[in-house]
Image (cartoon, rainbow, N blue to C red; front, side, top):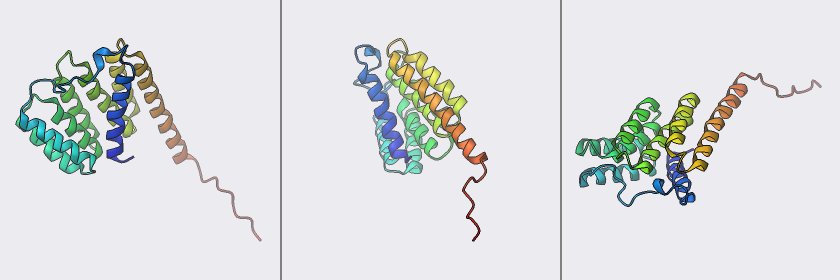
Length: 187
């Protein structure tokens, strides 16, 4: 799956989860001001440019821009989030997970939506890398955060963890199975 598609699925998936359950999840709706703490205009612009580079399939450029955004304002969570997305696309899963944690840490405690996006991103990065136990722990943390506001989303992410394990088992079986193609009969 291309990074652009994963980014859109991740953002739209979180949006659908939170908007679809507005009655139950009023605390999880995206706020008008999505920064976790007042960020500088420069860090916001760099995070936006990094996101655009990421969506256009340029994760190395996205990473460089996100890191510039972090240097511009270390308290703004969004440059950390875009850094994490770029690192994930570049296959640096541990570094991506650490950046997602840093992003989550910088959202205000009451910004459940921002924190949930960072948690979901970390879980998704692990799942995409086939690191199902790590993904399951991150999905569990997401479910713990949103469960009282949006039980449907919490149940859904548990299925994602199960899907990760099932997919990994299928891949392992396919790799371990001998070639079962029928032999060509002798003439």
